[in-house]
Every structure is written in structure tokens, then in C-alpha cells.
Amino acid sequence: MAKIYLDLDDGPKDDPDFYLVAHIDKDDRMSGAYIVCIRICPMWSQLYYAPEGKKGVSKDNRFFNKKNEKGEWRLVLPSMFDMNSKNYLDNAIKEAHDATAHGGVEKTLKWLTDKFIYQPFLMLFKEYVASCDSCQRTKYSNKAPLGQVSMLHVPARAWTDITMDIPKMSPVFTYCSTLYPNIPLEDDHMICFSRLWTIVYRQSGFMFLIPVSDNLTAEKCSDTFDTHVASVIGYPYYIVFNRDTLFMSDHFKDWAARKGIRLEPSTAYHPQTAGQSEIANKAILQASRACKVEGNEWLHKLSEIQLKLNSRDNTARQYSPFFSLQGFEAKLGPSSFPYSITP
Image 1: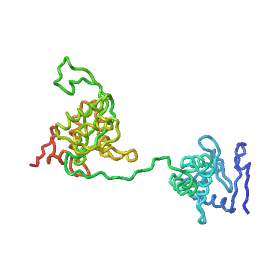
Image 2 (image 1 turned 180 degrees about the vertical axis):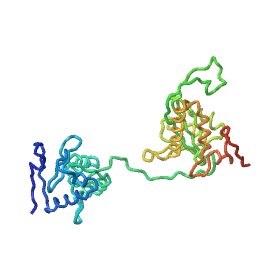
Image 3 (image 1 turned 90 degrees about the horizontal axis):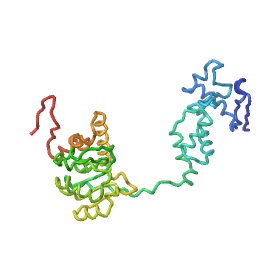
Image 4 (image 1 turned 90 degrees about the vertical axis):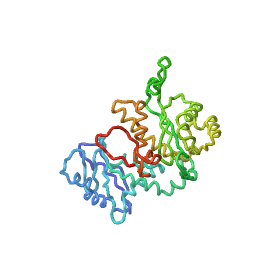
């Protein structure tokens, strides 16, 4: 027969607010298993065997209690509470999960750690909640259904496929003559650049970095591409991009149709489609932060950043983007030591 325990004087005599809540020992063996496990627990055994009278600790023949950070008495649960093929920690997690009306991992963990002192093993809670039959039957996902993954085609040759994005950068105010020295002095004026248009060619990883302002329009976007990119390597066949309003505008779609370019926007269910742009953005942001640390603005070092990133070895391709296209490495500047040039 199960025993019900209600102890009101198990704590120190000088703490009248200490008592244990009634609990039910269904098989009359939990108390014995608790003492055995707490004595061999690598986390609490040393404190359990400490001399009597240690402040904030109370122990008797059945339970070990300790004050938490708030000065409240809490039962200490051993990190391993398993005996005779019975895992009592599973019972504790089950009770916590039921007490939260089948809440998630965080709510279940919060309920248990509020009632006990326990070094939580998050994986145990995740596994239990994930395996709860009631949760699987009654909970619904708060995420949109995932679409079927459609792999991007492999580019047939260089300059045919590109990905592009326009990440935000730290704003930089500068005169136009800083970027275009041929501007007459009387026409020079200050402008703010706060975004960077990254255009990455999928086959080689070669990138163009074009600074743009916040007031960039779709018309300016297409004109910028004509001037800075198409004039160098022509127009691509495919463009992969995220669903930026500039690229999804009617003007940009009409421009792409006139140039014979097929637009491939990422879907809302698979925003990772343009992952190559995200990887490029990560490298660009790191390089811009390094410029800031060295006392320079990213805008003033943008051409240098572009050259160095295009000359950096790509792990997957085993070559730099520049070498993949040109067949030789670019000269970045003076070197402290002589090195040979492979013809």
C-alpha cells in the first residue's frame, strides 16, 4: 500500500518556515533509492557528507534539502536517480510536464527547477516532450508547411548564374569625389552609403560589391547593374535572390525580361535558397568590422575588400574565385619576401 508522508519538522529548528510538501511513495522504495543515489551523486555527495550544521543545508535519513539562490528550501535531486530498472527522474519530468498542461520544454523545465534543486539535462526534457503521445496528438505546428525542396541547377559555365543580396551596413557619409575622383569640385556633394549590393557568380564564387544608399529604387538598381556589371561580363542567364522589394518590383521584372534573364526568387518556405549570398555577406561584414578596428571605413576600403575576398581560397573549389576565372592569382600588393610566378 502506498504511503503518504507529510513532514512539518524535518528542517532546522531555527527555521519555522521549512517543511516538506506531502508526497506519495507509490512503491515504498523511492525514499531508499533517493538516499542511495544522493550518496553516490558526483555533484552532491560531497555536500551530503559534509559535517552537520552547515548553513543552508538540511538532511535526515530520507531527504537532502538545500536553500536556493532566493533563500528558499528545495529538495536536491541527484543527477542520476535510477535504481532497480526504475528511473525516478522520468517520473519527476512526467509530473512537471503534466502540471504545465503538456507545456513545452521550457515550461516543463521551469516548473521542475522551481520546485527542486536539479542540474537540468536539457536533452532529457527535449526527448520526453518530443516522445509525449498526448502532445503529438493534440499540438499543432506554428510553422508554415515546408515546400518540396528543389535543388538549384549546376551552372554550365562562368558568368551564367548569379545570386545577389543587399545587406545593411554601418552608414558612412562621404563626398562623391572620394569614390569617383573625376567629379568636378563644383558638382561634388556629400552622400550617405548604408547598404551594399553583393553580386556573386555561382560557378566561381566571384563577387562584385557595389555600395548603394537607402533610397535606391528599382530603376537605379537596373541602371547600376548595366553600368558596373553588364559592361564587364555581360548579362547572366539566371538570377537567384531573396524576395527583396527591389528585385520583386514590376520594373525589375520587366528589365530582366528585356535582357533575357530568368529570375529565380527564393520562396517563403525556403529562404535558404540564396545561401551563397549569405556566406558572402558573412565574409564581407567580418572584413568591414576589421576595417573599423584598423581605423578605416568599409566604404573607403571596398575595392580592396573585393579584391582580397575574390583572391581568398575557396575550400570547396580548392581555388580562389579569381584563379577559377583567370587561371592565375591576382597581385594584391607589395610582398616582404620574393615569390615565384607560375606562368
